[in-house]
Image 1 (cartoon, chains in turn green, purple):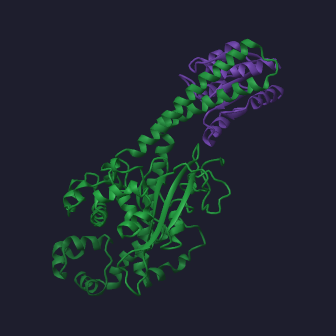
Image 2 (cartoon, helix red, strand yellow):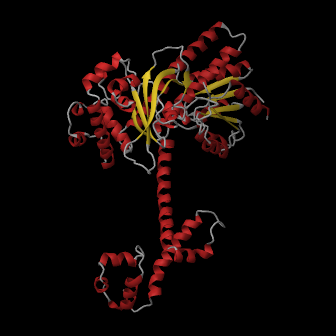
Image 3 (cartoon, chains in turn cyan, yellow):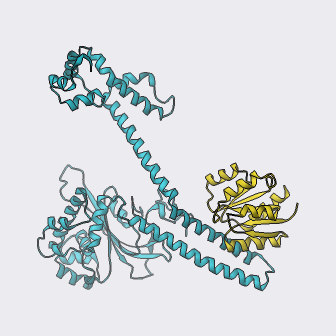
Amino acid sequence: MMLGLRQSDLAKEVGISPSYLNLIEHNRRRIGGKLLVDLARKLEVEASLLAEGAEAALLEDLREAAAGFGAGKVDLTRIDEFAGRFPGWAQLLVERHRRVGELERIVETLTDRMTHDPFLSASLHEVLSTVTAIRSTAAILSDTADLDHDWQVRFHRNLRDESHRLTESAQALVSYLDDNSGSADRQSSPREEVEAFLQARDFHIPELEGRPGNVEALIASGVELTTSAARDMARRYLARYAQDAQALPLESFAEAVPRLNADPGRLAQHFGTDPGTVFRRLATLPEDRMPTRVGLVICDGSGTLTFRRPLPGFALPRFGAACALWPLYQALSQPTAQIRAVVEQPARPPQRFLTYALCQPLQGAGFGAPQVYESAMLILPDQMDTSERAYPVGTSCRICPRGDCPARREPSILSAGI
Amino acid sequence: MGRNVLLIEDEPNIIEAIRFILSRDGWSVQTHSDGRNAFDAVRTRKPDLVILDVMLPGRSGFEILHDIRADAETQTLPVLMLTAKGQTKDREMATKLGVDRFMSKPFSNADVLAAVRELAGS
């Protein structure tokens, strides 16, 4: 420092902490007004000169951000004017630029991991080698008109061996990808944590049946809930669970379900409640009290899935939005309409399901406020009544093989339709 | 040009299929499966054309190709390279090392045959 002044003394004299002064000195904090004038006076320099250092650093960062954007698109001659007139926006731009750099590095690391994962690479090599042998051998068998018997036997045996090998390597690949996606080191979202919490309990919480249970104790015992966001979401879910359990008590509800053929409309009528509550209640009964397994998905007005109880065979998307053809979304566009539809998912063989869907307004928005809706879809295994028309649906576009779909929003990563 | 092919590949059933196709087309096919002494095999057997897999036990097809091109005796020997990794990276690498043709697995028999005929004709 100039003037033989110690940093701590200077800080004291202008009334700030030494560490704050340190940040200012290294252009990590932008200052102005009285503090700038005070500092300039103590240091016996012009205030504008003092501000210049920080300005220069910001300009340098801005130039760097502009450099990656392509020449000619940014008017660099007016960069001083920009930083001077909009210092906050300029700082934001610089920080966003830094963040983009960080994220690019993360993407690079992940891409590297995909490309260089030795097991993945070896498995794919194995699959391709086997497919090559099978293709070549099959072509010889089918295209060679006068293939003698010994060769025929030999190539048939090769074909059998290679197809066994292909089965094994394909299975190894699938189980590797499955394991990998389920591993603990994967970053999970709060919603996924809540789902794991509920899945571990088969979606049934005996502590909340028939009495006002201790939600906080339940959450504290949930090892799956690692973040406060997840605990908060679980808290809201469990509070609703407790309400539903009071409206439809376990014993009488479970007794009525098989009698009314698990029809949510008839159950709602019988208990004098809304079908939405019945949907949720059906998805929380213990499995031994249900005549059939059920799945349930709930989405908000934006179509984002907010709850998912999977039903084996009915594929739910792991990320992002689901198939726009789901009755769940048909219901969203016609609130309070009670929809019943048989749908078919494109598996081999195609899987049929009976669905009930309903969109209801959520309480609490009040007059004059935007109406908030929630749509829910109950999924049951189809009773195999083939006389009823089944609507073709998918899971989500990326993994859907259906060609020529009016609801398609992006191409499928699967090559051909089935 | 003679009709002797040396097939350097370690998958027995691919060897058998390629050998069958080429033999029926009038080629005499010798095979070799170990990467470590594959270059020695090229020198002693003096084939008219080499079909070379990239992933071999012991030594990669790239290294063997490098040796083939570095040796005055085998410098101009036509080489058809096979790989189960059809990435641009591998293709570029093979081109840089002086490969004549490059094919990704799985290939069709007709493609292999056409490539071999073409290389022999040139």
